[in-house]
Image (cartoon, rainbow, N blue to C red):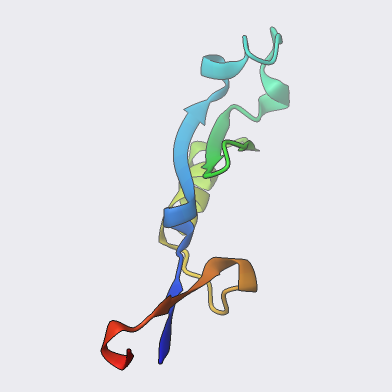
Length: 89
């Protein structure tokens, strides 16, 4: 018999809080990002990075907690790895 190993969000991504002033040089900008200065950086396992920006620290922190604790209800096919059960031969 095979068992499915479900990969969670945390296994595939690394999520960190950032601030616009820490990354604005990377974007070659000298502004306040239209007030969106509180960010979340998501580093994917495949080395891609996404940033999400918020106007308030509270909204950013709420989304950060949601991302860190989120578990998929129904994993899509890409997140399931079938492993052989050694007990079943």
